[in-house]
Image (cartoon, rainbow, N blue to C red; front, top):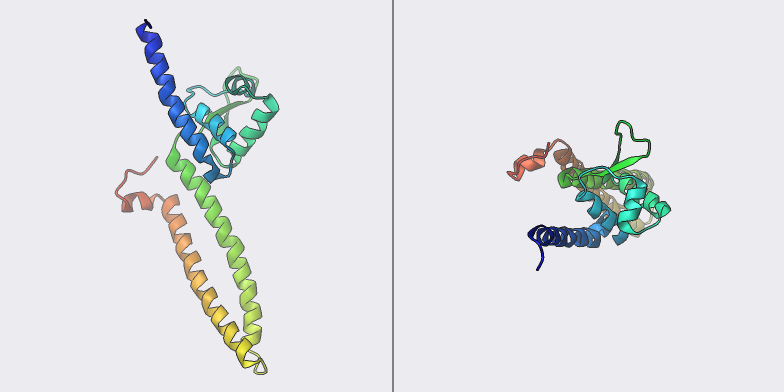
Amino acid sequence: MEEPEKKHENILAEAEELVIDAISETMDLYGVTPSIGRLYGVMYFTDEPLTLDQMSSKMGMSKPSMSTSIRALQQIDMVHKVWQKGVRKDLYSAEKDFFKSFISFFCKKWNREIEVNMEAIKKAEEKLKMILDDPSAPVGIYKKAKADMELLDWSKKYYQWLEKLIASFENKEIFRLLEENPPN
């Protein structure tokens, strides 16, 4: 028969493993592999910051692999480098606020989408305007250019809406609209 402490330790480990598995499985949404997601999950349930050596030991993976994984997690703001007095090695801690992670990750992605597409729309509009301003443009091409310009106008409305959505996340207005308590 198991002693109560060991039994409860096992139940705790099983509960954490369920969530770590789920995090690992869904981290593709953030553009990382399941093994990187597993590392994040392990760090999520770790109270103290970890060195690469400690991560390597916990995960059974090489230190270079841990270094690559940590860099990937830092790029998406899921892990932060932390400083601790008297510790010479780099320490890393998981971002435990899912709201903050979500906002940071998706706002960066959405801002990139806006920037890339608005630049393309601007250049395309200049070309389409050349056709629309040219009285010698063939009727069929003129009509298609006009239809394309209308599509681009509709696209710009979407990107303007997306900018407002991003702002609502960044200023936390979205949480008030959803009647949720905003994260700190």
